[in-house]
Length: 181
Image (cartoon, rainbow, N blue to C red):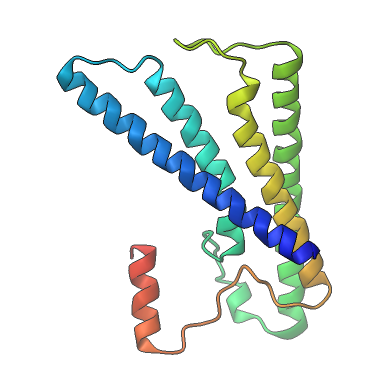
C-alpha cells in the first residue's frame, strides 16, 4: 500500500510539473503574440518564472525514480557485488544529506514568507509563500524519494533509479535518441 502511494506521489508530482510546463508555454506564447498585437499580459514574466521554478522542482522526484536524472557512474559501473553496494549506499547517503538540507531550508523559507507576510515585488503583489510552495514541495517529495530508495537499497534491493544495460543495438540507439545525444 505504501509502495502504491509513493509511486503515485512521484507520478503526480511529474504530472504537476508537466502542467507547469504547459503553463509556461501558454504564457510565453501569449506574451510573444501579445507584443505583436499590442496586448500585454500583466505579470506574465513573474508567472512564467514562478511556473519554471515549480516545474523544475516538482519534476525532480519523478525524474530520479525513472532513472532519467543525470548520474555519473564512471566508478560504480565498474564495481560489482558488495563493493558496489557500499558505493551506492555512500552516494545515496550523500544525496540524502544534501536534498534533506535543501528541503528543510526550502520549507523554512516558505514558512517564514508566510509568517512575515512577504509579498512579491513584481507587478502582481501576491504573498511569496504561494509561488514558493512548488519549490518546497518538490524538494520534500525528492527527499522522500531518496529516503525510499535508501531504505530499498539498504534492504538489499537493486537501485530502482538505474536502468538495466541495453541488450540490443536498437535499444542503445533508442536511448541515445531519447537522451538527445
